[in-house]
Length: 330
Image (cartoon, rainbow, N blue to C red; front, side):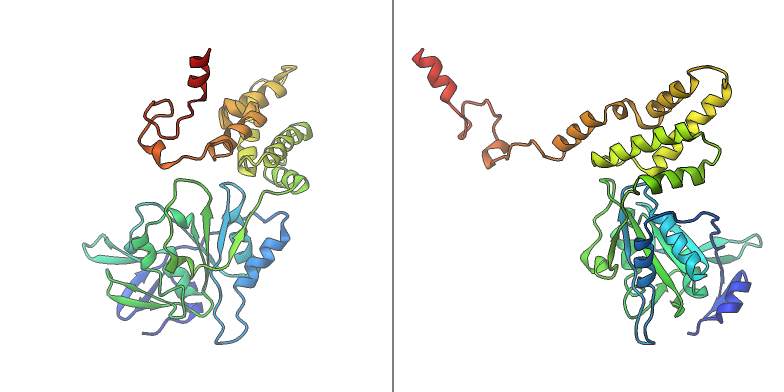
């Protein structure tokens, strides 16, 4: 099998591989930019360097809390290299054929084959971002195992073809750090290296991010939001720049409904905080303490007997009887 010429693939909407005609996905165009944290951008770009014909690019994992800008980071890296960008949103019910080639019934009643954003990036020599990759099941990941090692190909059972990756093809996988995800098997994790942690921005960068997305917001509203976010970061709470942008957007929309009200700004910001982030966001310290306890900060270690007996059960072998002895002596 031979891949088509990169320029031909970029100009056309279809490509033929081993006699099978594939409809290509459209590249993602984003006008946004990456603000601050220049080091993590350089680290990602370094992963995509090929030092020699025998040197393969790396496929890194971009790990961090939801809303910190992992996808935007990959978008910025693709833009910096001038490569077309394709994004595939991974979900729990993603199937191998969804990742590769999907058969579709065309208008004339024939079967047409649509290439996924991933396969399109492979053919065109672009960048593919597998967004929220740890929401995808193992069966789907298994279909990508040969792509992310030295073989650099995928096999579409549906279309009956093998698709080789262009030498310029690059990829990255974003992963959220939350509980609603799958555990990726070790043989896949070993192919997704290195791990690049994307953290929360500092105060200056966070202000610049909000100003970029909301250039029409007043300085006082921006400052209130940034102070709230920075305090949450200090307490290890995962309120992100995305949360701040949404909070501020809602507050500004509410203010626009009654701009002459003397206390509308503060009231609107408080309402937006409650509506977007919940009542618990009003007391960050208490929320942080509750989260610490939930994660086991104040938990008492359990023994084997705790699985079978309640703490106050007289039959509990580890029950402390000191109080009972004191009552008996009295």
